[in-house]
Length: 118
Image (cartoon, rainbow, N blue to C red; front, top):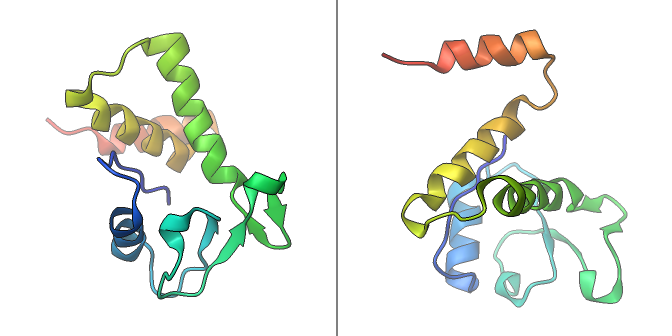
């Protein structure tokens, strides 16, 4: 399940707190080599992008990077501007799309209809 949110800062407290809040204690964690994850109390595998590595054994970050790349393409190509006030709505929309990306069209529609309220 993709959990994504808008954060004001990408420092240690914010990123480690986000992972701690949303990742199950049994989840395998994969991160890039950002210094924000230095000293993270949970075991995690890393990929060092600064030396041209995009996967290291079983430590891939490609799925997450693909998620953000899709959001950025939509920002530039479809929405053009995401006002900070509603940026979280765009991020939640793409997280929702990510949840159903492997379903066929009929199942995606059924999922959407089941989620409608009102």
